[in-house]
Every structure is written in structure tokens, then in C-alpha cells.
Image 1 (cartoon, rainbow, N blue to C red):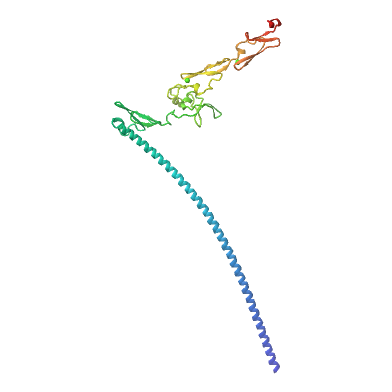
Image 2: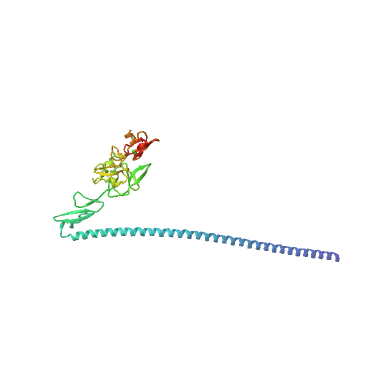
Length: 324
Ligand SMILES: [Ca+2]
Ligand SMILES: [Ca+2]
């Protein structure tokens, strides 16, 4: 009896102890789990912080880029504003000039109020009205021409007129598409091209219109050798090197070359050609060897002969004669 009770109690105690241990174990496990959770949470929070920092960094970079772009835009806008101001200023200046011109015209008109013609509004437009006894005269501004009525000036369409007051460079020739031998004096197109259609004119330069072209006829209405205003072109002044081996002589509508000795002019009279003395005079350098040289000739006499200037021949050297 006593033993059974004791056994029962022991069993109970054992069970209780076991339960207590189990409970303790459970609590420990729970604690471990909690700790792990805490660790995980911390890690998660750290990761989140890192991500946030990265985002912030990215945002900042973005902002900086945006600022850079904004600055660029601002700079561009400023440049545009400056350009516009420049344009406005220019326009303003032009307007002012225009106003000044108008005032000048008005003053001019005002001064001659007592004389009727020039006082009329728009009289001698684009020009200057000059009062004369019982009459008047319009003097046009450059680039304008008097209208057939004589009462005002109209703009000259330079594109329609073959020659203008514009002066530029005249070139002696065009070689392989390049204008060569520029003349020093600036001339008008007709002063250049009507002198010689082989010339070239302008900057950039263009070959002159061909001799038989419509353009040439329009440009050189007075004919070759004359400028558009009908005046003779001084070819010698235009091209100082026009007569190599000669002297240029200006002629009305033309020119000619007066050749140096040893040269003769060709049929055109505009070129000086070397004379081949050896061919012209077969007796030249008799007994010797004649050699033509530009502007002259030379004689080579054989041994025992010497050149005599008076006869232009090689003569046998005789000791007796040499002494005399
Ligand atoms: Ca001439
Ligand atoms: Ca010669």
C-alpha cells in the first residue's frame, strides 16, 4: 500500500519535473526565436536605411543634373536675349538714320519754300532737289536713277543692269578653274571684261562672258575695248605687263605693243615675238654656227676664225691682218 502510493507520487513528481523541463525548454526556444526575429528586424531596418540612402544619393545626383541643365538653359536664354537686344539696337539705329534722312529732306524742302518746285511733297524722292531759275533739277542718291518725268529717283536694279559702280579685282586669265594674275587696280566689270573676254572678274571671281555671248553684248554695249559708259579702256594701265618684250600704247578701243629690238609684233599687234635672226639672214654667222636666243642671236666661230661685228660673219684669222 505504502509503496504503491510512493510510486505514484514519484511518477507524478517525475512527470512534473519533466513538464517543468519541457516548459523551460519551450521558453528557451521562444527566447531564441525572439532574438532571431529581433536580429532579422535589425538587418531589415539596416537594409532599408541603405536603400533610402542610395535613393537620396540618386535624387541628389538627379537634382544636380537638373540644375546643370537649368543653368545651361538659362545661359542659352541669356544669349538669345542679348542677340535680340543687339538686333533691336540695330533696328533702332536704322530707324534713327531713316528719321535723320527724312529730317534732312524736310529741312532741304523748308529752305527752298520760297521757290515752288522743290517745296512740293515727295519732290526728288531718293534724291536731292536743286532749285534753278524758273526750273529745278533732281540729283539722285547713289544706286538711284532719275525717272523719265525728272521729278523723282527710282532704285537701280543692279541685277538687271550689266555694269554697276561696284569695283572689284580683274584677272588676266582662268587656268584649271583658277583665276590667275590679278591686276592691282580695282575696276568695274565692264572695264575688266570688255577689255578682254578671256579675263575674269570679281571676288569670288568668275570668267568674263564669252565674246559672242548675249551677256557680253549687254555688258559691252559700246563694243570690245570700251566700258559700259562708252569710255575707252586703257589696257596698258589695267595690265602693266600686257606687252612682254615691248611697250604698251593705248589706242581708242584698243592698244598695241611697240616691241623691243630683237622682237617683232604679230598680226594682232598685241604680242612681241622673238625674231629668229639665223633664219631671217642666212648669211649671218657665215663660216660659223648661228644660234637663236630670245631677243638676239649668238655666233660660234670655228678654230682659226673670229667673229666680225661689222659683217656679222666668221672670218679667217690671218696673222698679217691681225697685226694691222
Ligand atoms: Ca584702249
Ligand atoms: Ca632672236
